[in-house]
Image 1 (tube, helix red, strand yellow):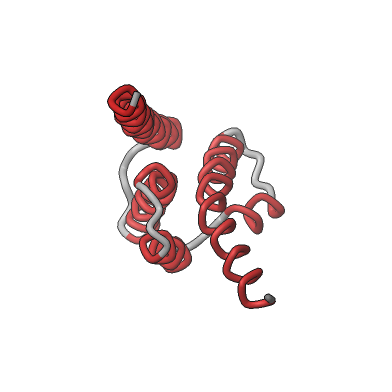
Image 2 (cartoon, rainbow, N blue to C red; image 1 turned 45 degrees about the vertical axis):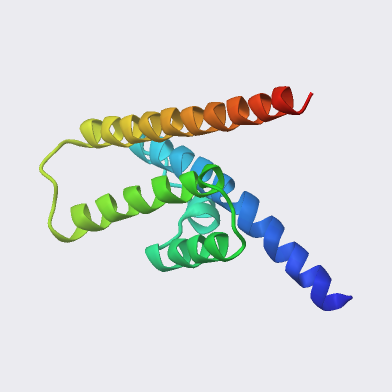
Length: 131
């Protein structure tokens, strides 16, 4: 019983944590641009590349669709850009970096909307074929 509960809890966390992480990450980026660096937000939502990869591996193991992995891809991409900027330096001002992150967010949101719409159309077509 306890093992089954642990597995269900892991499934729920693996399914919904990417959304909370990516939303918190975007909020943290926007607030940091305006000069408000919150230690609490950094502790809650900042994740390294390794934890993102682990959550991604869990999502593959449990067979989640691309829709649930998309926020992880966004967070992973922004973490890679952050690491590159930290170690090598990207010669753009902070405002331009924020715009780059928001453009990435828009691209991933459009990809997510396309995937969700494609899934809903498929589901609707199979219902019509059944009836």
